[in-house]
Length: 448
View 1 (cartoon, rainbow, N blue to C red):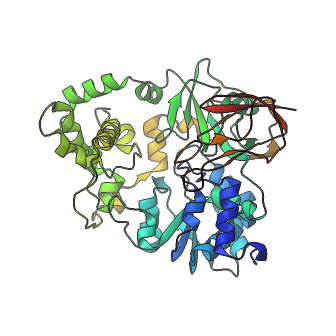
View 2 (view 1 turned 90 degrees about the vertical axis):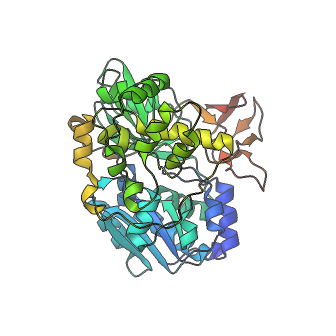
View 3 (view 1 turned 120 degrees about the vertical axis):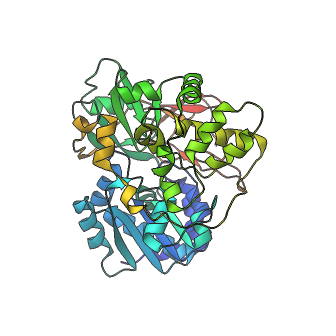
């Protein structure tokens, strides 16, 4: 497969990817042009998609394999990598076949992953593919690796041809009539997406945006789809996992302070601990009992937590909230300006392979096995009449609008950007329309 000669230089590709507003589409939202401006030995495409019930990465790999591989080759050329690897769960046979077919004769290969959670964690994926361990509190680039979500790579290929990011593919699953994976314009409400899935089958739906474990839980069905929305799982407000996730933080802390018996299950199942990193949620839980002394020390055990949620939603036999305690500890460390200062050596736990959590076991514990249905790819694109576009859809700073209320805009037109040396990503019009409203948080586009 030949890459486009017009974007043969790394600088040209980086500029086009920046202009197109490409960010990490797997949920992280890191501006992709920054990654492509670095140098690395290996580019890894993250197609693990480990959140239960979500299928958008598998669908993209099956239906857009050529674009993904082209994006890989362009990215490899930009960073000077000799090898490209696509990490896919072996169970996704159609995706595996499509990527292998599209990458035949190239320097891109497929690496098969098991069906466990969280296979898509960057630290875990880099180790699985390369055998290397990212330094504590480090990034993949420190071991010569760049990691991009598979949808991000397809967007890189489109950016090389001058097409900006204006649409997002996502899965709508859970308590809906017909689970589906579809592509929608940025700014489409999740309410419209649920309607495209036949509507909710529960009277008081709650959404787990981005997944049940690492996603955000909300009852706001009018949330707009952004560049990082991978899907939404619809559940009843009375669902046990939803009740737990919606419990107020003050109650979570009070329960943990009174009930944690230091059994260590949260730590023994922690994927980062099993990789050899100094993450011990049970020690963080001790910090709930400290109000004046010792708290800073225990907080450090949370510094390398990846927030996968296994400790809270799978491991803890008392249904406490160690992940949330780790979140609080990391936030407190940021406020205090504290950074990781512990051991820098990493050695995987000898029981790591045996303690991986199969997706089926996880779904059983979450009481969602009954929602484990395919969410087939739907080729049609929704065309809503009103799009709400958040000005911040990536890591870094929010976009500064370059248009004003009343302006008529065309699909693909740039609506705003960040300063050249700021971290962020440009925003483009998903459709023809009129700018109806601009606030400090979003831009509303009334479509024609």
